[in-house]
Amino acid sequence: MVKHIVMWNIQGGPEGAKAASIDRVKAAFEALRDKIPGLLHLEIGVDRSGVDYACDVVLYSEFESQAALDAYAVHPEHLRVRQDIEGLRVARHQVDYTT
Image 1 (cartoon, helix red, strand yellow):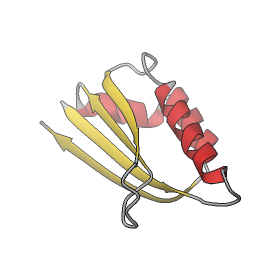
Image 2 (tube, rainbow, N blue to C red):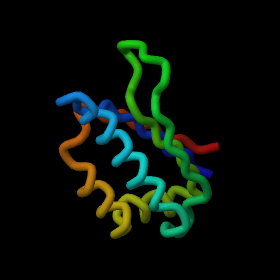
Image 3 (cartoon, rainbow, N blue to C red):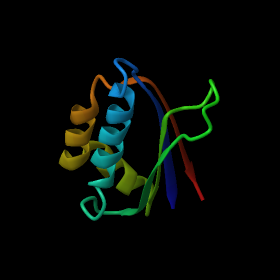
């Protein structure tokens, strides 16, 4: 199994804009459930700590294999989500590991 974790910091802006962007990222990734072969688990978390070094959003996902993760990277639904959230993030961090 391959675990794929991505964390983003989301742009600020006018009051409420950051929260709306976070909701948009969350909804976009949640819509991928049951659409990607080999994607076993997907959850999206929004930071509630409020510490200045925290990321705003985290994606935690599990894939049955490295091949499934590789296929996800180029899957049309995933590419659509990436395009949809383009410009919302100011930083992105990723870790992939096998268990």
